[in-house]
Length: 231
Image (cartoon, rainbow, N blue to C red; front, side, top):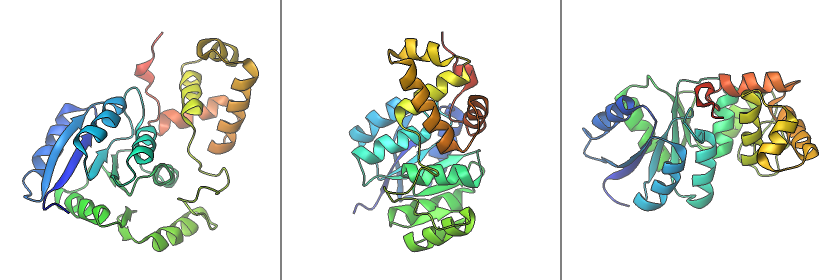
């Protein structure tokens, strides 16, 4: 294991990225090896610069941070991901962990605390709810927060808090932009019934009653950008 911890910063705000770089590089054990302003670039860079830890925002253009985390973890399972975001609620934390993140931090975290979190996840522990946790402690936290036992990393868990698939996320993005099922089917080149099936799965996973509530959920959690509305 190298003396320096190689870091990749993923955030579309240049000032925030520069601030993180400045903070991290004052520590001799931290080395920022790359920056990305959107999710697609982040996936490419992860393979090119081989970071040990990625600092990831959720609200990104093109592909949101949860999707990016899932892609990176599927291709490079050894990379640790720390979510640094302004969206803070238990459900969002759970989605992040299921996507593969090892830590979930607010954007106003202190520099000293962030450096400690980086060391924590590099060593294989989790940082959730401002606490360092082992995997067993993570399970207990999930049970306490969710009101029943849920394994956030198990592949055979039921649909509660299962992340949306890439196709479901794509459909949800179109829903937030006001497209009907028929319009989405035409745009994606799939059948109307396939879109309806995906919508049923989306509503079940998000535990909402209709497409309007699903759109509000996506916007409130920073999964979709309203200003990213392309024709």
